[in-house]
Structures are given as C-alpha cells and as structure tokens.
Image (cartoon, rainbow, N blue to C red; front, side, top):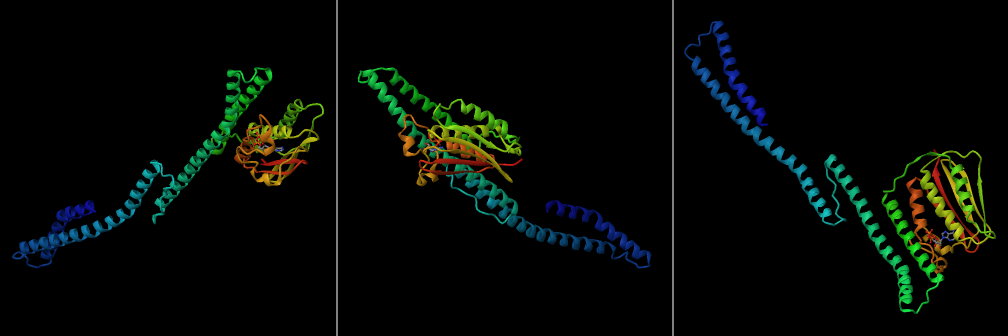
Length: 346
Ligand code: ADP
C-alpha cells in the first residue's frame, strides 16, 4: 500500500502540473488569454491536487490497513494456536490436537499435524503396554532362575546335569523372548525393513519343508507340501515370508504329537493363500480370539516348562499385515489347527 501511494504522489507531483501547464498552453494557442489568471490557475490546480492526494492517502491507508489487519489476524490466530498446541504436545500431552481452520492451507497443515500426533500417541501407547507385558513375562523365568541358583548356593538343591539343563533352557527362553520382543516392537512400530518384490514361493516352501523334515521324530507327525506346479508370483519379502513360515511351522511341530502337518497353497485372485494345517492338540474356541495377542499362551502351553514366549504369532500377524496380507485361524480342541495367511499376487 505504501509503495503504491508513494508512487502515486511522486508521479502525480512530477507530471500533473506539467500536463496541466501543457493544457493551458494549448488553450492559449486557440486564442484564449490566460496571462492574468495563469499562475492563479496553476496554484489552484496544485492545491486541489494536493488535497485530493492527501484524502486518498488517508482513506487508502485506513481501508487497506484495516483489511490487512483483519486478514493477518485470521492467518496469525490459528498459527499462534498451532504453536501452543505443538508446545503442549512436546511437553508430553499426547492428546493435544489442533482445531480445524477456515483457511484451506492451514486446515491441511492442521490435519497432517493431527495425523502425526495420533501416530505418535499410538506408538507411545504400544511402547507402554509392551513394557508392562514384558516386565510381567520376564518375572517368571527370572524367579525360576533365582530359585534354582539360591537352592544350589545353599545346598538345598543338588547340582545335577538335569538342573543345569533346566537353567540353560530358561536362559534360552529369556534370550528368545528378548529377541522376539525386539522384532515385535520394530514390526508394530513399522520400523522393520520390508523389501517387497515379485517372488515365486515354491522353492522357498520346498527348502523350508526339507529343513523342518529333519526335525521330525520317527513316530511323530509327517510333513507335506500341497501346492500347484506353476504358482503365480506374489508381491512379498522372501525373508519375512520365511520368518512367518518358520513361526507357523515351528508352532505346528511344537503342538502336534502325531498325525500330519500340511502346507497348502492356493490362489484366489488377487491373493495367494498359504495354510499350515496340523492335527495337533488344537486351541479352545474361547481362546481363538486371543492367539495373535502378544504374550498370550493357552493354559496347556503355559504349563509346559519352559514353554514358548507367546510372541511368535503377534510378530507373524504384524509381518503378514506389513506385506498387505491377512491372517486367520481355525482350530478344534484335540483335532488340530489351521493357520492361513494371504499375500497379494504380483
Ligand atoms: P509360543 O508358541 O512361543 O508360545 P505363539 O505366539 O507362537 O507363542 O503362540 C501363542 C499360543 O498359541 C501358544 O502358546 C499356543 O498355546 C497357541 N498355539 C499357537 N500355534 C498353535 C498350534 N499350531 N496348535 C495349538 N496351539 C497353538
């Protein structure tokens, strides 16, 4: 506004008297005699022009100043509010959210901030829950270890290879628990690197089946692979698919004493399904909704000492979901379980 008005005044002051003077000269050329009133006319013109310029300056300044103030207030107010909210958020109030604004761009900024805030709140919530669950889970094996070590120290427990094996098994479980929790927290927070690419699952499944077949005991279950010869490619990370299969096959092997463990693969565009079907001890219908919860174990597997960690299936579910698939379970007590997951076709 100031630049505009200054230009108007300067240009007007330099050119207007000159133009007026020219106009008078043209009139004199047409025969009018202006010699007596010429200087008076110029002076009057200049004073009228100055007064007009002053008024326009005053009115322009007031109107544009007022408008600028209103517009600036509309922009600045939500920005100040946003600053306050971000400060509250930084101080640990993770529930703080920015309210909507009438200005489109600010509204977009507010929405992105709120989305980021929800994600952070989610991660923080999961971190807290994980720590609570983890400390709870660590307590049992640590108490067992402490009891044994104290007993060995004061002589109430005789040292035997069986006792040391038990101690070693508990420490192995602790190590596995820590490793699994680390993987789970990465997977849940979305920090696990996933390298999605078109892959053919057949060679991967074959090598896994061979690996697990070596672990089968003579009168234990048999391991089978049922899959079409020309499997369509899937979009997945081979390492993560292997991790999922190791978890599912490991469980099937752990909870199946006799019968069979079958890996079945079929295509249902736009997905490919992979199922691990066992004839093991199964899961109670009332327990099924919890199998994918972290640290959940059935009463039966809790009683096994040292049992699993209850984290495997939680990791498995996160890994499947990170690759755009879903995982389901069906099971009947004492008949067997079927865990199946899907992967998107490439
Ligand atoms: P873990 O096997 O280490 O305890 P998981 O998360 O892999 O942990 O499994 C959670 C629980 O689900 C197990 O403790 C077990 O009770 C049950 N479960 C998982 N897979 C099977 C299966 N194939 N048959 C029967 N129960 C199973």
